[in-house]
Image 1 (spheres, one colour):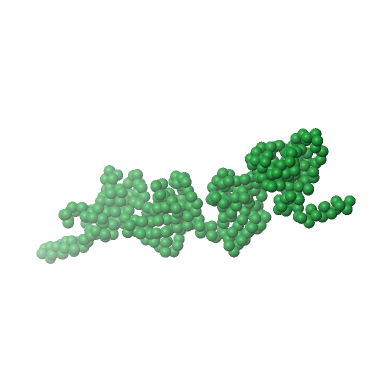
Image 2 (cartoon, helix red, strand yellow):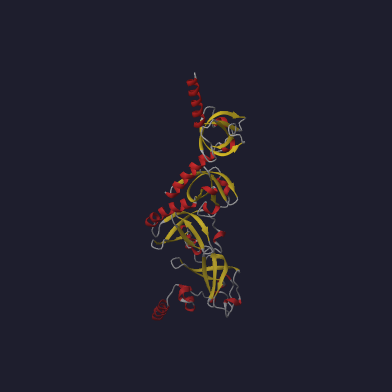
Length: 402
């Protein structure tokens, strides 16, 4: 009898000694004993003989509407001890967290992926001032400047989307995770750049998207590199600001003017993919036609008049008036609307010879003659006429031999 008592006492002491002391920060296993009003879970901590409480907010890294969907009575959960509840060592209980233990594992995985330069696919859960909040297993943040490689006006379009991101900064101790979708786009763009430079050549007509606008032109994304459309190559009509006729994101057709693979520069033209203003000029402005025009420029030798967008012709000073004038500015001013008669058409040289006085009645004492346009060129610089001095002298010699 005495021997049995000794054995029972010994078993009791061993059982008491086997109970492990629970400390804050310990990772323990808890069996779900009860679910309290969908607000918390009561667990028995294995090996400790005490109970713990897991509040709803500490159950998962994800949002939970119903605890019963996440755990059931009898489930075993791996938990971390946050703090002690009560002072009674035997009857006390502990505040536990499953979320923080899961977060530890997630942070460790993210740190490993960052070290290996791996990318993440993360859903956007919230749009806030300055960027996007995403779910990477833990809360992550994409600053607005790291969303795209272009300016983004409205971030709300990203809510609910899943973005591929690079890890920029990881600080588990501060719950800080900074991510970048822009870095992924730039890496993809780098990979495509050499391919695009090798595939396009001068004269190609391709489709691109307006990436950004400047005061001197528009940069067009060709799918791996941006090419420049200078302001002079946007339209045959005068363009004061590229933003007057183009907008970011707009799809445009462009002609490749030049490719410098070494400097990674591509020059483009929009206007050269469109019908030119001098196309069909002989039909639109035949000799003898009367056209409405606007005085664009005045020179010592005449006036340049725009008769169609991008098409200017010259009214030589001798064709402005039946009266003698010292300079065109004596009777005309820039911006003035006038009517002109077409004297000659030279499509290849992009030249029109025009007359104002041919539409006016000549004074009775003036002999009616019509000077040929070629004679006008004697008073004009070569670059304005398309004729060289040799051409003019040669014509004069030919005339003298007749």
